[in-house]
Length: 234
Length: 218
Image (tube, rainbow over all chains, first blue to last red; front, side, top):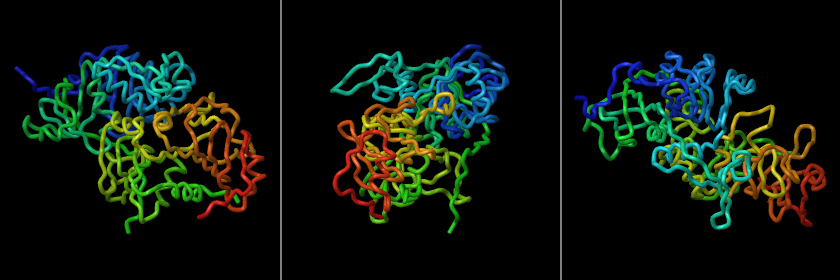
């Protein structure tokens, strides 16, 4: 009996059950904290017609960008999609549907999706193209628009450490959308740099409790840097 | 003379007070951090999940897990904290950030701002800009006053898709510091050596000018 042990031993097992036309929510901001090996596994499987929910869509040869040449993504919900030539080409040719969503609204959509809140009002986007077709309401004289929650068939997440029960700790700004994505998947798959035994993580320090997590896999990561900026050492 | 990018950043920095939490956008706003006075304490918020952004790292300090909203490698300042994206935008939407500085393509007399999209040309997305303009009480927009071809960016009505409606009250351009209220631009300060006439000529929206408009001090 596996009990609460959620560790799987292959990427194939980690993404088992992913089918064409599913919705996949991915953590990460730019190339920071992205589930890079889970994305590669989706590429390997050749799954098509995916709706991908992620702040960005990677670059041409890394991150979610690797799913573009095989036309695996049908629609992407993202806040910023620059830095990717093939993405731009597919978008301009209407081969790829893009739903631009403000970053904070995107985060809240995931949070709401995981928390059983079907929709929420936000002032973000009122009076802009984002508000088109959405219900508007005033509270205390301010205008708000109704935004709906997002849930995924799968959520793919990168964390720093996990215990076998799926309790997660993230590292620095690689946290970003990952804890939110983790809550919003019917099946949440997490790849990590280190797996420890239950009880080894301080319960006070856990960012995502294991209840949200279905599968854990140990990975090794390239962690590519998009904008390497340095100052001179004095 | 028109202000340089550095001078625009320098003038914005004068608006930052001791104890402020500040979000700086990409481009000129990022440069503001270089001109913060030494005698005040300021925390920089980076919307990807960092409060207390430090300077760029040395080669030895580079960490792929530590970047800012412009995806540049950074370090943390003393007293910094990390958090997820929902928490980050709770700070922003909830009005907890004291000052937001961001760039724009156009602003108009009603405080509308267009900054994220040129239809048919530039479609990259709004990132956090729509949340920032919707959430902050105190926003300074930095931009050039007019295009290279002399077309005003301070308009009667924005022509590009909006990032936010009725949310901008202050604009600092390379020529002028302007307040937006009651459907008009009000000229607060002019760049050293720039005449009121030149600013008027390059401002499409109605510009209110007092008898004596001071030059910016650096």
